[in-house]
Length: 253
Ligand SMILES: NC(=O)c1ccc[n+]([C@@H]2O[C@H](COP(=O)([O-])OP(=O)(O)OC[C@H]3O[C@@H](n4cnc5c(N)ncnc54)[C@H](O)[C@@H]3O)[C@@H](O)[C@H]2O)c1
Image 1: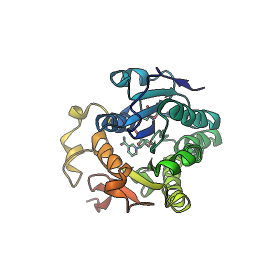
Image 2 (image 1 turned 120 degrees about the vertical axis):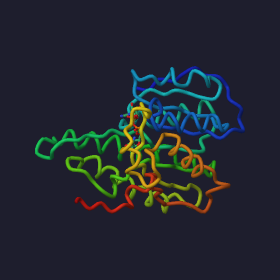
Image 3 (image 1 turned 90 degrees about the vertical axis):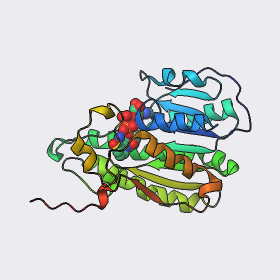
Image 4 (image 1 turned 90 degrees about the horizontal axis):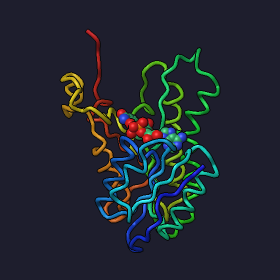
């Protein structure tokens, strides 16, 4: 079930983004960054999160939508609510995601499907529901995958598979929806979404750039990819934002 926040008219000439998983972490940073840069944002997250609270400061330029990104009708309704409120849609940021670490012998089919539904199928649903509006605005989609699309720890099959699928879905959508709509992917590495000060020295030093990532690191590149003036020649691409970690060879002594 989806629920709209307060309806207050926004300035019609401002670009509008629909961001999923907007109540926390990376999605919240992306949403706040876009709002600060003059965008209007439809912020989508599950009920019983701090979603409404997170966007109280932007009553005129934001809309909060509560629901499950894996639900077909809810996603279609979220796009409709965004268009009703703002009259246009210029960007979709498919960021909502969950991670499940579970040995494969204990990974149920239900577990597997839930991760795939939220991390991968939801992006298909969003792209399909939004494509008409994005075509008319010459807009853009950014998917949020992970370096785990390209490398793994044990017991992360459903997450890695969902993120690998997102890379393929990204280039497939870019080819199908171009030239009107650009579609790109950002693959974060370790992004600390809370208690950055509590990280250990070795957490930072294992990264070639000397620090763990922050949500703002992802928000900056998403904003760049949504800006047709700056990134108009970029589509179907995957941008790894991991402080160089996935480029480092590790030999145990
Ligand atoms: N933080 C990292 O280190 C990291 C690294 C690589 C990739 N990522 C990816 O970045 C994205 C954001 O991660 P984060 O660290 O900010 O996570 P987070 O858990 O802090 O935030 C994810 C948000 O998605 C929402 N969400 C989950 N399921 C949903 C559903 N069914 N419908 C609607 N909303 C739902 C949650 O309520 C939450 O607000 C995810 O796709 C994640 O896989 C994160």
